[in-house]
Length: 43
Image (cartoon, rainbow, N blue to C red; front, side):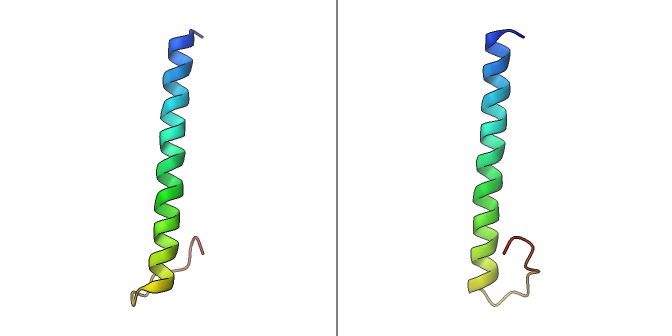
């Protein structure tokens, strides 16, 4: 694999992980605080 390709793949997975962490944290905060009846998937 070329170095540039490895960097692009790494950046993609790093961004994907960041989105998953932020959305999971936001979902758990919303499920705790809000009045919505969200299923506690990530709690």
